[in-house]
Length: 412
Image (tube, rainbow, N blue to C red; front, side):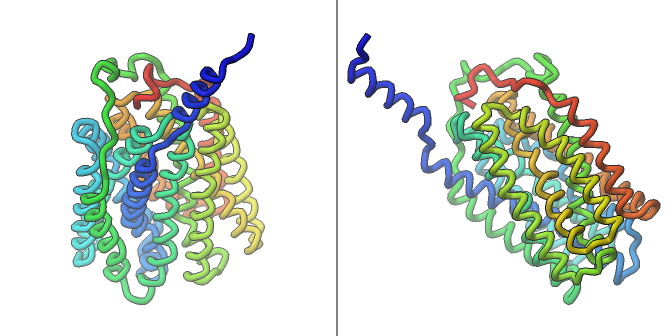
């Protein structure tokens, strides 16, 4: 049977419409990435103060790791609440308000006269910075069609490694030469500036009709979301082990200078950011989030064992290369898990579900600092790295075999 020209034209029009992504979506994504990145700069600052606190001021690794975890404890306490507020009122003012509050907390940390007070302001800043996490995730699923979400969420997930990269390059030299207050100036200025930009330029995506909103609690429908949450918690352990103790390991064990060590971490985090985009594209092509997630889980186990081996041998160049490789692999799961959660939860639950997702991750992150710090003190870096490889090994069989999505995925 001959196909008419009209049918061909209509088919091409439908395909083009399905593949089109609004130009404004990319601008909103850019603002979402920038807002989360500057929040990460603040949250990452305590980790990059560890060499100053441990080597120059005599603080134990356990206590320094505890201080470094305070922003993540703060995030853990407020992520679900910020997600619920975002579901109710939208992304624009949640992100703007959170960034301004983070900047204020940074000012308080600058004038703190004790480590306890410093930790309290880091805690408050983390509570405020959590606003950007769930809200920026909703920007992706709200503005982008399903077949572009893996790419878009991969770009969005660049925010964390980009924030860590900026902090790794800027914070250690400032802290080493000018102290803690000077190191905090960067995040104070960046958060205040982005808060203003988002208040002016950010727009909420259109909400789907209420008849298409998922009223039923998705956690009661299946165990898919819970399994993704647990997998993500396990995969956070090697990620935060590397990001929290990488700098002090490179300096104290491999004898790199603070500047070179910070540069290595910056390269690793930037490469990891690009890797997140690549994994997102793979998930779009595979039409699956969970299949690549399984690949990342088993790869994370392997790279942590490789890092342990190179650390034990003590070859500086090989160990630094293994560190970069481990950083890239251990951050690759976040975008996949976030997209899977948002698509499964639906528009009326995505903010809360992403809040639960991040809460679990930050609970793990807050534990990694003090526990792995004590573990390193007891058994050394190589064995500690090898022990953390157990977590991604446990995550692999827990990854669901099939994706699950809301009944109206294109309206999320």
